[in-house]
Length: 363
Ligand SMILES: NC(=O)c1ccc[n+]([C@@H]2O[C@H](COP(=O)([O-])OP(=O)(O)OC[C@H]3O[C@@H](n4cnc5c(N)ncnc54)[C@H](O)[C@@H]3O)[C@@H](O)[C@H]2O)c1
Ligand SMILES: [Zn+2]
Image (cartoon, rainbow, N blue to C red):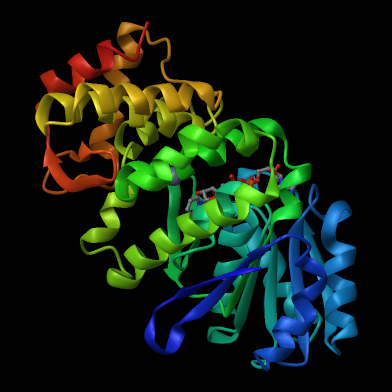
């Protein structure tokens, strides 16, 4: 088992990463001296696979348990589900000493985390992320929340868990497409911070695609370490945390214009990162060969690196970028690379350059 410490003073916590960890959840919660009762929040895909193991472990460690299961998928990240969970917690008579366990992907983690942050003004929160994306990204950093009709993640809080437990075995049941989408964030960590990680991904991608846990553990741990360090230096997104948005300016716009129906998030930011690589080549001296290596790595991972866009859709894409939350004072800001492993945020880019980059990722 590997451990990554997230350094946030009195809210510091540990991420445990390894195979067969779910049966240990009870013991780990006991170790943290969490309260006597807990509610496990999960979704309908994950519940039949893992809820029993988690509940058994918690009960064996002496906790009183309750289970709430929500429909799987992004539409569950809404206030109506939060409300349903509050009622379930109240019915189960969870008090201030109790805790919430999020068992599932980023949807469950974000929604259940918001429930934990606000129920009785905050109860302890433990995450068991079961998708690759949630293990390397959404479970690290303390952003919790839900969507509104007006947009994604518009209601939320910064609320750190007491513990995150990444069981590598849970990835075995994850659909291949979801798994590959998570790898887009893994590759992102290589590009933004760690050329050695990037080279390992190039070398070991076939093992990674076969979910070989001997390579996965160290790679997931490295991603968590990078995010933990960035978040530790900039918990509330003042500056450095922005580098995590590499590829996301165009990626989010692609998701928005396709109404979140065509591409998974990881697929959209794969195309976004290829476009950011092209912009970086033009504007921040990213060597041509490195941009090509990045594109190739997305390709061999089985991620999309281009999309079809009509003229109207292209206009909508440019407009959608203006609406993205990374716009400040009317200017779209990009994170750009100067080398694999080194990026800087805050670049204002001329729309003509954006169009030229889009020409190379669209047909
Ligand atoms: N809080 C943050 O910092 C942060 C960062 C990135 C993304 N997010 C959020 O995360 C969400 C996306 O998370 P996600 O990609 O994990 O999606 P998800 O939670 O919808 O999970 C994807 C699908 O896989 C299923 N699933 C989960 N684990 C499984 C397993 N082990 N085996 C089989 N099926 C499984 C789920 O039921 C779902 O159908 C978005 O809402 C996004 O906004 C948050
Ligand atoms: Zn992302």
